[in-house]
Image (tube, rainbow, N blue to C red; front, side, top):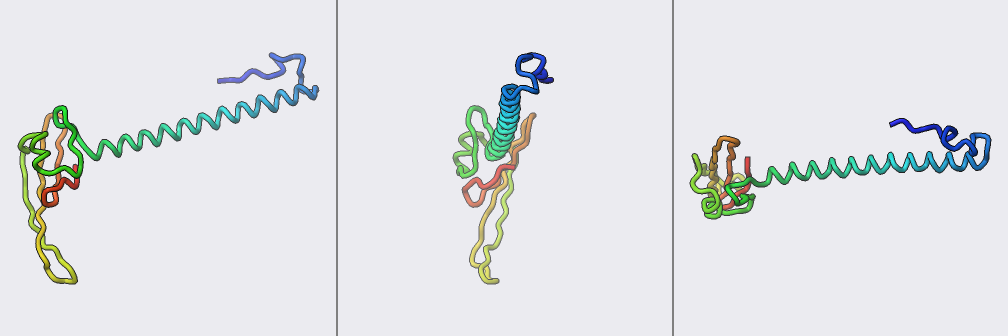
Length: 130
């Protein structure tokens, strides 16, 4: 947007007038302040958009319920029902080059017309939503 020249709308305070220079300084300061406030608003909006995206990756909707990481398999079954497909992977747990046990991870797939979600469980706890 084009700003009018101060001398066109304030003829009594022309550039040669000391009062006119003070008014011009004030107007320039206001423009700079407005520009800075616009930059702040854009920065806040960018942060909010980023947070919104991050939050969307942490969960998904099953009917009227929201599934989030940290839930148990029983809770997810209660919210969403049986998965479309599932797989199980048993991996050794090592410490100092020795196998000290095993851990079981499960991958459940929920497929729908709009999106496919893969839920990864470590033991009984939901650790990732892909």
